[in-house]
Image (cartoon, rainbow over all chains, first blue to last red; front, side, top):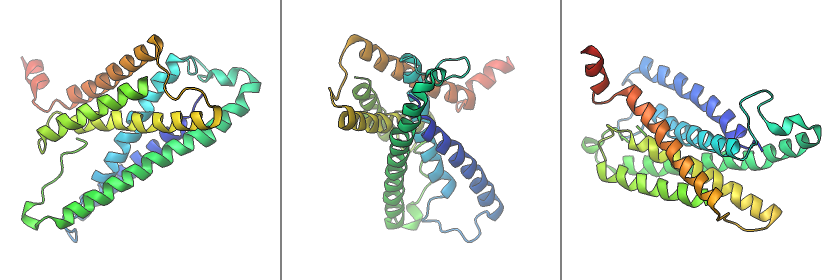
Length: 132
Length: 98
């Protein structure tokens, strides 16, 4: 009904986080950073792309099924008071599960990428173009 | 059906991204992450719906296939807009300067 709202909320938060981290990294510059480690802003950009990509395509699916409309209150479940509770239940179960799964998969990708970057000789470490 | 089609799109774009790597000029990583994000979310949705409501895991009918196609086109459209806005080859810049 509106399960994509949870990943969308997370995407908004992580996008703001990425901007803040990016600014901090710019201020710090190369000082104190380990060349073998990937930048956090870069890692967060992967999560943002996963979350926003999923949210946008799921939103299309909801429009397709008539669950989201372009006029207020935007969610058709909101038009009928009897549908509000099942919608909130779906958001709390399906939506949260989606957000957790995407975040866990991203965390695994980050751990693997970190391990790979550490295993590489320093001269070979180059910025990864993935997700760009 | 749209889960299968999006997963297929994610696999294909990841393979193309890997073949072209480390060059990230055309933002193929973004395209594959868009499809992977949607694939993961729909996978969770399908599993949870199957466990709680039962029924068929995959919805295979013309409507679901058309939705799958629409989703892929929409994903490609989002990627294309990002690509044209960032204009990595400077094609639009040169075109507008004329």
